[in-house]
Image (cartoon, rainbow, N blue to C red):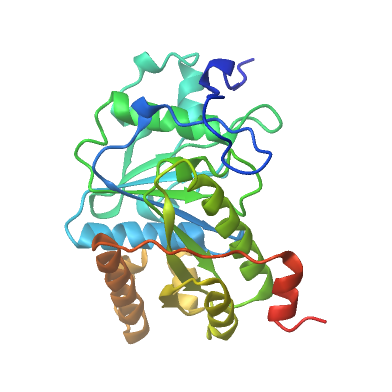
Length: 302
């Protein structure tokens, strides 16, 4: 039985830790992504990160950019609406060749999606046996070895749930900007605060910086606005809780493939506006995360 483990040799103890008390797997300089703009998308589990990531990838492609989306979740459904199916993960494919990566071809793990978006699902190790950060590293290594990143304009990492360990935070080692998807509710904002902490920790050793907030599945943004004002964040886009967006996922397609009703056109235009703003020089955001009790006090809990 094959297991995924992290060789001790990849641990770089010469660098300071990414956060107080942390022992992290540091990025191999040879795995640095080239000239593409790289975004890592985080947020509370179930908040719509994959739908947001896929529609954003589609919007970038509509603007004429060559886009690669990398799903970083064992559920491997990040690219579902781009490809119309669940594609095999990198770990699944590596297992078929007994982890001899040199036997793989590009088409074995990269799948064409809507409007030319390239789709990869990193997957994850079997439960309880390995680190998600190692899986992300192996995926980027494969893409580099096949020269797939050299002709790519935009790379999007769609990362599972809240940041609870260095493995989930590994895509931040590759990213230029981290974007946080949140809803206008306490739990989503609580998760956002932890993500701000994780990005600050990674920023000590890597180029990643906060890019901004994407409000999703929310009629209003008053709670998000209150938190943003307190910590120094900025909302870059707002997507309401529309049934049309939910139905697009059920239809296995992006919002750009749905019938062009006024509400769908408005969402499409918001994604295109967001994509265009991200292609421009996006200033980094310096945000100060809150203590847990401070969030309760800020959002009205006794």
